[in-house]
Length: 445
View (cartoon, rainbow, N blue to C red):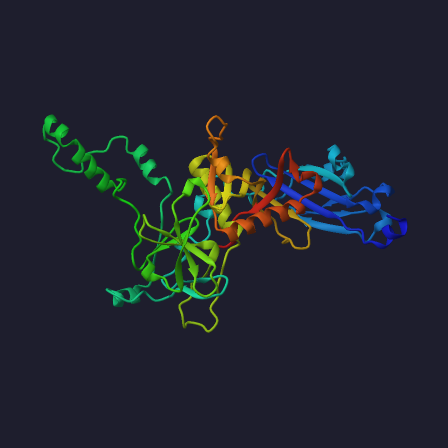
């Protein structure tokens, strides 16, 4: 590139800051373009009076080049002095061939900063659309073509008059391993009968009956399965469970999976108008599961206003909630994301809770709550989940099945966020590094 071309091209800065709550420090990256590398220009970094923002500018040759970034948290006063004398170059030899010159700085968080969330927050804080968010008048529609799937009034049939007055009932489903937790919690399952004077022989002969009664009364028996009920919407991390009679505008299509883990044909639910995948049939629960990633929600009753407000969440927020639930339930950090068609993504949730901010044009000025993700493309999902005899398998590997459209969107998001990171931070060994946004209920209350 000639000197004349370098002079005509605009000189821009790129700032990126990451907060790691566990060790309470912020890493700031400052990237300079190749155009000024030969001029030996070093950035001048100024911490704001509130210690919540950083302004970076160049030397006198580029007085008009400046940028400001809002930090994910307030740093301590010692960071001001450290920034004024610091500025050492990132030492990773891989950046020598990059078209940017990078500096990195570390700043300690102020001990009195109360903006960080408590580590004891409830799991629901990362889950969009829980039962408490809904009302009796809530409606659901396809987020693609906007056709109504769940109306604000109750279905016709027996008891319709009573249901019309109370509207929909929304209930949160328990954790996926609730039965196992109940079994651990109730080490001793007492006889539900009031009379405990029967003799030992009677107890022994009727042991199976008593056990079955305990399981029925306490709700953790095999017969006590979650079943869809008309007029009630059951809510879990990623889906809404309803009866087919409560839904409209959906059609069933049989789909066969290409993976050995799910060889049986599955009935998918498609939108009648646009053929988008809206959910799947749940034969065990005797109902239909609608994906949150395919829906928009309105909590206003039909007819209350001419233009009701409809809301939908980013696909990555719902997938992130599923990953966080699996981390809490299975204590796993590595997952295979697939849609049942052979290929997919292998991801490693390296850090489930971080905050970051950067100066890219398409990024919000406020800090975002996210997860640090390491990922790889997988060609043979079935071979990774079910290796041949004699081959090593990972005991800590879990799978998460998504619709093909959601899997494609997540893959594109991870790849685009990888390019958003400073070039020296885009790879870790054989992994690509990226960021996935979390749902943050504290920003929506």
